[in-house]
Each structure stands twice: as C-alpha cells, then as structure tokens.
Amino acid sequence: MSENKEANGVYFQIPLLAKTSQVEEILNQYPMVEAQLKEFFKSESFYSCFEDMMRFVNEHKSQFNISDADIENLRNDLFTALEFNTKVNVLSNALKNILTISGKSLKNVEDELVRFTEKGALTNFTMMYVEILKEEAKSMISSSFADYTNPRYTS
Image (tube, rainbow, N blue to C red; front, side):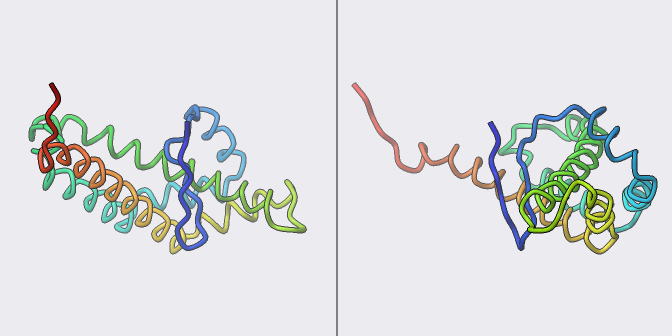
C-alpha cells in the first residue's frame, strides 16, 4: 500500500501506515533525538517548509475544490501531519541505514536517529518531502484534467 521514493539518498515512505503513538514511543526513547525534533518544529526552517506547502495549497485551491475556510480549518491538521510525517521519515531512514549498510546493527539506532535529526539534515529532509508532496499533487491535478483535454466518447 505504500510507494517508495528516493531523493539524494534519502528514503521516503508515502503513505506509511503507522500509529502516532508507536512512532512517538520509539523516538522518545532517545532524549537527544526528541529534543532536536522539538527544536526543529519550532524553528524558522520548519515554518518556512510549512508555509511553502500552504502557499501551494492556496495557489491550487480551485483544483483541489477547497475554500479559504476549509484551508484555515485544516491548517493545524496539516501542520501536525507534516510534523508526524517528518518523524516517520526520520525513523524509516534510520532503520533503512541500519538494515542496508554493512556493519550497522540495532546498536546504531541512536546514532542514525541523531544524524537524521540534525537541523541541517531535518531542513533538507522536510523541504524534499514537501517538494515530493507538491509534485504528487501536481500529478494528480494533471491527471484529473487529462480527460478534458483529450475527450473520448463512448456509445
């Protein structure tokens, strides 16, 4: 049920069926990781990524058939979803490295999580994720208009 994406060596799982509580439980076992994530989610970098996503939604609201009120009502949900997806992608990338890089083991989980939660890595990571979301949305928009640009008639 999921689609794998790779961008510059970073692995994205879209969508990943995961319980928020399970992801939180794993990440909360590592205080440094938890602190870095909290700091990042309060940073200008994260807000910049979020606002970029919101600009995209506003620019394409007619294609998505949503109103300004809908966007405002969904704003907090979208913010929370971006936070959660960032956490899921940090966790999945750390696990991917542990499972695919020779010499790594579960003992390296914290090291990998810390590496993926450094501010620069999180910023690039979240920006790439937002870009993938925007490209997926553009693709959906294009495919929904495809039937109108090349009408096919059936009898």
